[in-house]
Structure formats: C-alpha cells, structure tokens
Length: 381
Ligand SMILES: Cc1ncc(COP(=O)(O)O)c(C=O)c1O
Image (cartoon, rainbow, N blue to C red):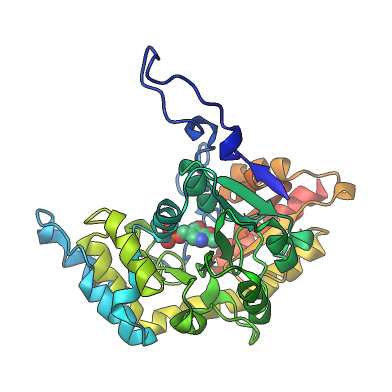
C-alpha cells in the first residue's frame, strides 16, 4: 500500500501566531492538477490528443441549445438543474431526487470527499487512481491510500487490504484513467460485498460508455438498490461537452441530500444544462463517437504495438496508454517532445508514477495516422 499525507502526520503549525495567513496543514503538500497540454511552441493549430476530449466536437443539437442561453447571461441558473435532472432520470429510469449534479464529475467527487472525510479518515483508491480523487481527499486532511495495481489494473484484494475502520470512501474509476483498463462487474460486486456498509463506494464511469465488453457494467443498476454506492458520469467525453463542465452522480437518497447541503447553489450553468439535455437526446452523435473509437482503438493498438511499444490494455476507453520499453532505448519524454515538435499533443503521465508512458487520446483518422507516422519516425531514429 502506498500512503500519502496521513493526516495524523501532517505538521501542525501555530497559524494564529503567523506573520501572514497560512493555509491549513496539508494544503501546500497537494500537487495541483496538471491538465493535458494544449499548445505546441510555434504551431498554430496542434492536434490535441492530451485530454481525452471528443475528437468529433459536440452534437449539433448541443451547439444549438447552447446558443439559446446567449440572452440569459444575467440570470442565475436553476440550482436544481431540473431540465437535465428530469432528462437523465427518464433516460436511465432513475429517481430524480437521488441525482447529484456538478461542475464536471470532478465536483461530484469533491462534494463526496467533503461530505464524508474528516481528518484521521482515509480514502482508498487504486495506485493509478484519477488525480482529482486524491486532491479532494487531501483537501479534507484525510489520508489517501493507494492500492497497488499489478499489470496496471485494479486489484480488488489489494483495495480491500487498504480498508480499515477509518476508511470512508473507496474511489474506483472503471475503466481507469490513465490506465484504460477495467475490471468485470463480478469483481466490483465482490469489492462491494467485502466493504463495510459504512464505506461509500464511488464507481466513476467517466469512460464507461466506451467499455463494450459484455462483462463490463457501470454499476448504475446496482446503485438503484444499494445504500452505499454512488455511480458518476460525465458529459465531457462521450457527449463532447468538456468545456461546459457538467457531470452527475446517482447516489442513495440520504447521500444525495447530504451532498446537497454543501453544494454551491448554482454549480451548473444554464448553457451547460441546456446543452446536456440536447446532447443526451442525440443518440446519433453518441453512436458516431463510439463508432470512431471502435474503429481506431484496435488500429492504434496494433500499429503502436508494431512499433515495439507496450500498449496497456486492451483499452476500454477513448485513449490508449503506451509504454516505452527499456530495451527500445527511447523515453516517453523524448517521444513527447518529438510529437510536440510535430504539433501532436499527448499526455505525459509521470505524475501518476508512470514515468515512461504516454497517454494518447484516440482521434480522428487523420490524427491517428499522423500520430503513428510521427512515432514510427521517432522510433526509427
Ligand atoms: C477517470 C475520470 N473521471 C472523471 C473525470 C472528470 O470528468 P469531468 O470533466 O466530468 O470533471 C475524468 C476527466 O478526465 C476522468 O478521466
């Protein structure tokens, strides 16, 4: 188990006697989130494959709905996000009162952390868990426990080894970012069965729509009857609304109501609510996104493997994680720089402890071909 910032060992300082305001203990130990690169020196329009955005853009219907918000800039949004609450409840046959909306699913994680973690508590996640989980937990002065992920995949037994009487939340992104790997639902169920009922199990389904194996399940059905499971989803990936920052969670009523007490009142905008409703209804756009992924994911995997790279997986997401084997005598940092110089932006994942890997979003055909061509040149150097 890898532990981080245990709250008991956080250094206490005399903040009242300080010459200037000091953040509470632990805050300055947090590594701020590092987003995927968006610019390449000297290249006006680089190809951005660094943030797992939707290469098709957004649904035309979402653009139209967004435009209708143009004359509402002076009005506060509906704090309950009723239009999207109703739309999601209908689409997935859910109880609308149990839905939580956030400024991205990131905010839903932060709200859950704030609701359940106090100093001395711990949050358990996989070794390569999505960065936002731990940032929020550390901000609550909780301990973050990272369970080893052998073969870059979640291991339920390792997660369970980390759980003790001070565990309040287990975060599981399935499929995971940055690994792209997933565990079958039988394993999620086994994890849930072994957890004390007092622990919240968060199943982050940001990439779940891209996981097409029949053994995969996002857990939403399971969450209907569970008292401690929260399933989260985002409009940032499949629906291509990353800029609008809207995500949601489905929680037991008591959890949804508790979270609602601390949620900032107007946390999703009018434009986001309207565009999300339109995007949710545009199944053609969703299918086009899935078709694109299904076409190019195996192609990229095959091509990159053919270059001697270790493609982690198989990926069940809209990206692939690629390792540079030691014997290749090429490093991911060199590859990253080379790709940037060609206007191809990918994601270094050193902050996840993956010093010699790159995460690459599956793009449009031209993007994928350009990427493989550039990497082939790099590997041949
Ligand atoms: C695993 C995972 N969960 C959640 C999110 C956050 O998504 P959102 O844009 O809804 O905050 C991301 C974003 O990249 C992610 O990779």
